[in-house]
Image (cartoon, rainbow, N blue to C red; front, top):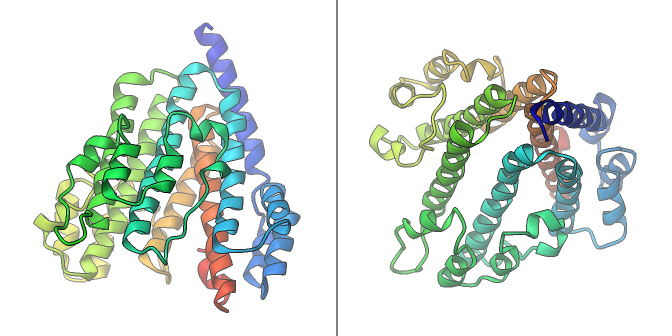
Length: 344
């Protein structure tokens, strides 16, 4: 396939993703979610949604639980990924493969949490994943893993194996700390993705995709920084808990944020960066909600930019975020809390 044909296929793929984005929840549907008082009302909104109709059908046919709800939502996200992946050219597929690595990362973290807190982290089914997500990733072994050695065996040959090997284990539990594990795994993921964007990907979306990858890493580091400030972490200690991939939020910015006298000063420092400008002002929610709002605004801009692979990546990211929001609404209704407070 020549360059012109690859570019034409990327444009068609991006146009398809933009069309699929139009099926996400509209303002009226979100308003109904915010005012929902019961699970049937939540399922009713999903039933009428183009993006989440299939999830509703699954949930109507089986017992409604935390696991069944999250898996039904995930299936809709993964199904859209598979549809787009199937029609992508080989070069675009290489980039999209990193999304499957992100799924593997989450499967590793679920296995770790289950080992530490068996009652709080029930088993999920790898069979709920589409075939593309089961190819090359030993997700079933991760689902079955009951010990550190079994988990390491499940990721043998994966990009995450060196990250797990580098972790220090607690002598009492035989497991690493969750914070150290997530930092090591995310650093490995973003490091590999950044290296691919630098040396591997040569398609027309190189600039936009490179910026998007750096932006997501910056947003994770911003959320970690704001959390670390709450606990008074020193710059030296915080550095080991942040992603090594840095875009606009450099090591110098991180030190300034941690040394700031109060949260307002810290936010002003963050907002002075290219990534920080996306943070909403006069925001009354949590720092995590503020970061989610920034990411949503950024990826909407990317989605409506040039028709290339970056728009596809933006759509898949936005659908994942909306799925996360639905899971928060489900949890709010389950515990009798107002969904509107958990939608940002």
